[in-house]
Image (cartoon, rainbow, N blue to C red; front, side, top):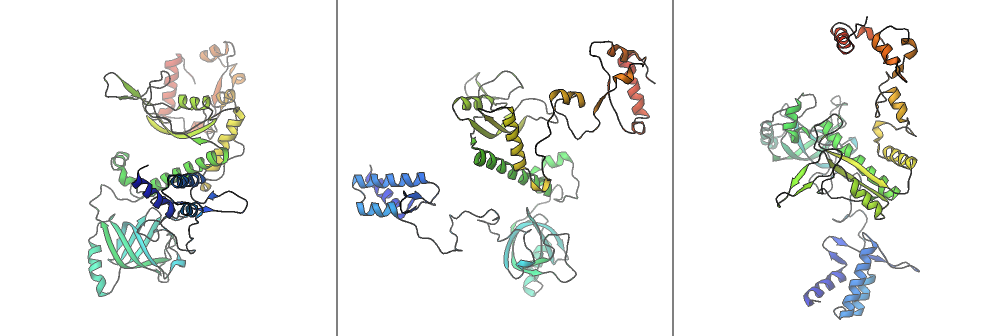
Length: 448
């Protein structure tokens, strides 16, 4: 062992650190082994092994080693967080300039000094600003004294969507001027300091939900469109659901999250695959349609419960229910039957389902393939569609329409129809004429 390295390790061990920002401690309980109080007991075991190694090499004295093995880090006073302390679940302001988000201030915060960061949403009367972030809106009142005249002049020329940092005091709005349509409408911030973090250039469209934008313009400036309230909600909702899925699968049912390779060999069959060229002429990688082979290998390898949030690629034309690149919750289990898989997926969806979207049925409605084809004519029906297919064979047997009698003359022949309530009010004019024309062309027969 290099002496310089040994001295460095000795200093790290004696101070209780093995890496910057990563600290481990030990506690002793009568009648129990020493256990780690840091991120895991494995690190503590590694720390003890390192100390014993240094003691054996003569670099670390025995007395120092014993103190390092059983040293307990001093606890700081309550309410004095350290830079290594994990933030609470609701701490949206950790490690940031701001003390609060624009949407969390209420009457209970009146009198507090706050720091807000966000985008300039509105300006009114050269006196009020409305600041926006992902959490909501907050009205800011500019100072009206002589010292605030320069600030007002600067803000009056400030383009909307500029990024600002505001420091000030939370005050109640004057009586009668509360805005009950805003979650923060009972208070406002009396600004003491406003910093311009970034000035906005002229934008192709306003960042307001009320302003209609074409789909092509939104796609061209996607980074601006993401600021809209709906897309912010969608992205955060997806994040919460994925996290809940991981909790359900890993913490409650022992699944292992395994990341499988993206570059793979070609697997014939199914959809077409994207090819990725390599530096070797004539050799390519293939992007997997799904991790099918990998997860089967994991089952063979004894990892009997696998899942991942997997990216999948299919070189096909886009359809309403399919696109070239998409994400799926991919999982595989061993020693399980169909009922077990159904119960797992139902539980996964119920656990991760957003509370604001209501509750899901328990258990889920179930239908067989035959029932789906009989009622809806497709194996993945939209059960919200209530105009189901109905068997009208008995009613159509006396009808002398040629193609109807031809169908009934065949083995297991039947006639089915979709009943449209008050359909006569909708099926008329050009729509009715085009339907009759289609029947004439397809069956060479008129229907009256």
